[in-house]
Amino acid sequence: MSEFLNGWSPRVLSILRFIAGFLMIWHGSQKLFGFPIALPAGAEGPIVLTAGIIEFFGGLLILGGLFTRPAAFLMSGLMAAAYFMAHASGGFLPLVNGGELAAIYSFVYLYLAFSGGGSWSLDHAVWGTEAKAIRTTATA
Image (tube, rainbow, N blue to C red; front, side):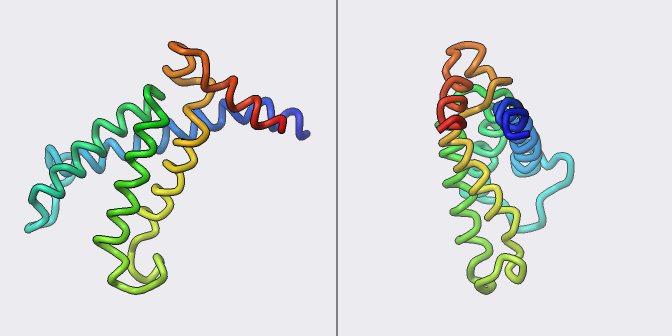
């Protein structure tokens, strides 16, 4: 069973990366284009615009698995900043302060920054390094 799971690990990592990028694109799209739903009134400003740019274009990079590690590192930092700027003042627990998504996104992206994009990524297709790095660590 362990061999089967280890063999699929780089592929499932790619699926996680794809879903995390796909979901983040829509957060950026909301901030930049007001689509699929508009931002709440008063939520505009340079910080929101900057976050929208990082979320939209970072999400595209993560989705395709191109420059996964630096994009994921930037996205992890963005989500940590979002948590502390928008949620932490509402209480200690993310369940209470509404920051669960920002917290989990931050750690998913931090994981991707260390693990890379997986075997189904443009990083792997172009440079061939991501899946090799994962196989090396999976067997350790």
